[in-house]
Structures are given as C-alpha cells and as structure tokens.
Image 1: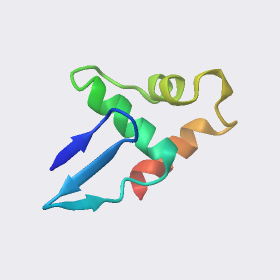
Image 2 (image 1 turned 90 degrees about the vertical axis):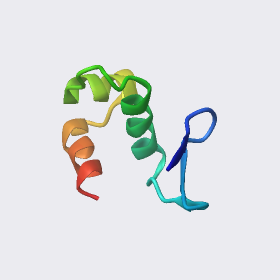
Image 3 (image 1 turned 45 degrees about the vertical axis):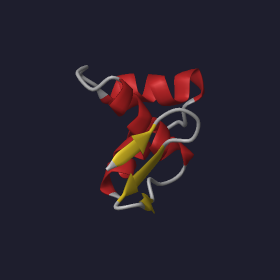
Image 4 (image 1 turned 30 degrees about the horizontal axis):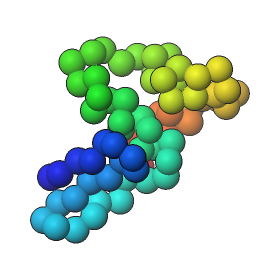
Amino acid sequence: MQLELLGTIRARSAGSQVDLGHARQRAVLGVLLLEPKEPHTADRLVERVWGDTGPRRSHTTLYGYFLV
C-alpha cells in the first residue's frame, strides 16, 4: 500500500485508489500516520482534527469514523 500525506491524503493498493472516507476521516488518518509512535487519546485526536471548532459530540463522531 502506498500512502500520500502531502496535499490530499490518499492511499493506493495494487495500483487502485483506496476509499479513505470523507475529509475529516482522512484528517484523523493523517494525524495517526504523521505521529505513528505517539499515543493518541480521543481528546488529542479531536484537538488535532477540529481544534476549538469541534462538533458538540466530537468524541461520538470520532468513534463513528472507526466503525465504518
């Protein structure tokens, strides 16, 4: 698998583009890939992806990304 993190976050497998979900889902993946050896709590991911403008139920939204 080839991952592209500069610009639009993309992945390719066997030459075909892999669907990584919508922009926020790709942003969460980007954070995890850019800091692979760091522990990531839900609070940290919410802060990195949404900053101070996160949705009211940002933790629930975040958990939903991993169930897809």
